[in-house]
Length: 602
Figure 1 (spheres, rainbow, N blue to C red):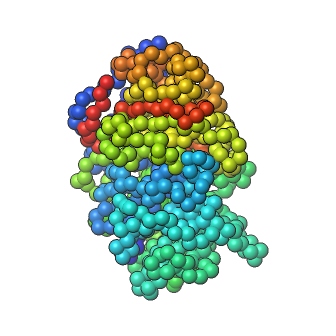
Figure 2: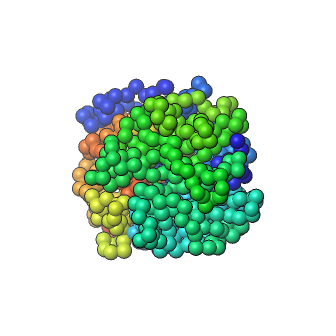
Figure 3: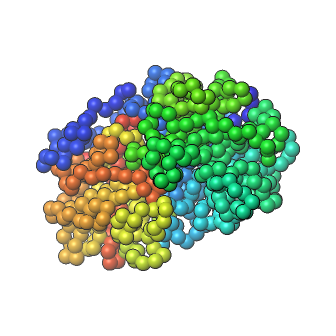
C-alpha cells in the first residue's frame, strides 16, 4: 500500500515519594544541586520514550503535546500539536524515527488574530490554537486550525522553520467547531478540508446524536473555501478527522465517544465511557458512502485513559504506524495529554491500531514495542537553558502574547530579564472567563492576569527536579517574582518586595493564599522544585548547594486544557517597575534526554 503525497502521513529514577519530597519534612535537604561548568552530558533514557535497546515505551512524548498531526517529507516526520492560549502557538517538532522528537519552532509566532490573547487582556484561556493539520503541498507548508471563538484559518511558510504568514481566515465561527484536516487529490486536481461543524449547521432532519462532519472543497492553493460543504458523518463527539487515500480507497480516521454511562459528560473520568478511534472507508468517493469500523480502544495499559486522535505514518520498510494522544479522562493527566506510538496491522483492508489483546477485532495501545526505525540517537524536546542565545528557546512559551518591551535576552547577555508590568484589573474582559473548559478555582487570582509568565512543559509522571538561578537585585517595591508551577492550578515560590524596599521569600497557592518567609538580603536566589507523580515541593538556596524547604507539599493538576508547566513570573501590584534576571534553568526528569553541553554556574 502507498499513500498519496498528501499524507505519508529503564532505567528509571530510584526515588520514592518519601525521598523526593524529603525537603517537606526537613529544614535543610542533603541533596545538592550540581551546577557544573560546561561539561558534556551524555544522552539518557528513562521511564518513557527510546530505551536505547531498539524498543520504546509509551507515551513516547510524555508531556503536554496534545492533538497531533503528522506530515512526512523525505525521511523526516513533522508533528504539530495544539497549545491553546500559549504563545507562540502550535508547536512543531521533527523526527527521523517516529520515537525521538526535537523542536523546530511554532506555526504561529503570536496569537495575532484577536485582542483577547494580548498581554493587556489575557482573556483567551482555553482558546487560541486547537487541534490542527500540517501539510506540505507544491513546495509550501500549510498549518490549518480552528479557533473556537474565531473560525477556520491557515498560515503558510516556504520553510518549516518559518517565517510563517499572518493567518488567513477561511470560514467563520458560526459555521465550524474544530479540527480541520486537508487533502489534495492530484488525480482529480481537487483540494478538500474536512471539519467538525458540531451542531452549528444541523437540521431537524438529522436525528443522529452528535457532531456533524463536513467536507468542503478548497482552492488548489489551499486558502479559500469553494462550496457550502457536504455532510459525510455524524456521531457522538465525532471529531479530529484525517483523510487518506491508499491504493485508490478513501479512509477517514475519526475519534468518537462510546457512552456506556451518560451520567457523566465525555472527557470526564468514567470507566464505562471511551473515546475510540474509528475509520471510515469508501472505494467510491471522498463523499462516501462509507463503511465504519472501530480500530482502537483504550485497553489495559493506561488505566482508563482513552486513546485516539492522531496521524498515520509509514516507515521505510513499508510498515505502518499511528501516533495518537492519551486524553484527560483519568486521574493521571497532570502532565497533560501525551503522545503514544502504535503499530498498525492491515486486516481485510482495515488498519487495526496497536495490538488486539482481547481478540475482538479492535486494537488496544501497546506499552513497550520495537522501534519503527533504528540507527538514530536518543533526543528529546529541549528543556535545560543557560540563556546564552539571543533568541528564546523553542521549549519556552508565554501565557498569552508577551509584552515584548518587558523581557530581554540582550540587555544582560547570558540572562533572561523579566520586567514587571502592573497586574491587569480584575474585571470583565481581563483574565480567565469561566466556561466548560476553564475551571473556576482561583481564577480571579492576580497570577492569571500577570503578563510575561514564561514556562515549559513538565516531562513524565514519575519524578522530576528543576532548579533555576535568579538575580533579584533589580526588584522594586510592590513587585512579586520567582518560580511557578502551573496548569489547572498555580503554585509560586518567589520574592516580594514591600513598599519599604524589603524583600521577603513567599509561597502562594492556587487560591492566592500567601505564606511569607524570611527577609532576604542576598541578591542571588536559587529555587528548586521536585515532584513525585502529582505531589510537588519547593526549596530555596543562596549558594546553589544547601537547599531549605519552604511551603507545603502541593498537588499539580491539569486544567484550562493545560498540563503542569515550569517557569518564571514577575508582576507589580501598583506600577510597571522592577525586574528579575534568570541565569539558568536545569530540569532532570525520568525520561529521554539528548546529549548536551551548557553552562550552569553558581
